[in-house]
Each structure stands twice: as structure tokens, then as C-alpha cells.
Length: 102
Image (cartoon, rainbow, N blue to C red; front, side):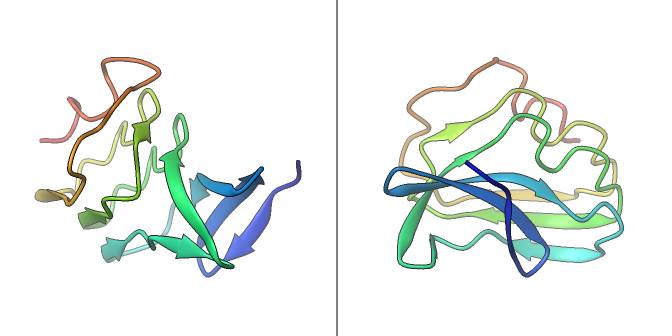
């Protein structure tokens, strides 16, 4: 597996799915995580993927995402709203995945 870029998203293709592994720390404003990258569904937000993105204000997560890794949004102090479009988050690597959002 190797890291690939899609806009400001760093991701890995694992089999037939995509995991978001990082996002540019200096990004500002709203972010919409894509449901599909290069024809493959985005199913996971990796551990610390958005950590330290202090100037993001909202994050929209598509229903294709089934796993949010631990501390995925740690230190995202600018988030004012998190829009979970997921029908269900089936699992998480750690229970602290989203609890740190104000």
C-alpha cells in the first residue's frame, strides 16, 4: 500500500476500498469527504486523519464510511458542526474518534 493524493486528502487503497489517512493541516472552512475516490468507496477515516486541522469548521462524512479511527478529529478546535451522514458507524478503532469535537 502506498499513500496517494486526491485534492487535499491523502488516502490508501486497500483492496476495493479507500481509507482517508491524512488531510492538509492548513485547510480552512468546510470539508466534504468524498464517498468515492477513483471508483472505489471511501469506507474508513484513519486514526489521526484530520488531527490538528484547527481551521476546519464543518466536516461532512458520507454514508459509505463505516469506520472512524481513534482521534481522527483530535485538536480540530475550529469545528463548529459535524455532519454525520453515515447511517451507522459500525466500528471504531477507539471510542475517542469523534468525542473531542466541541
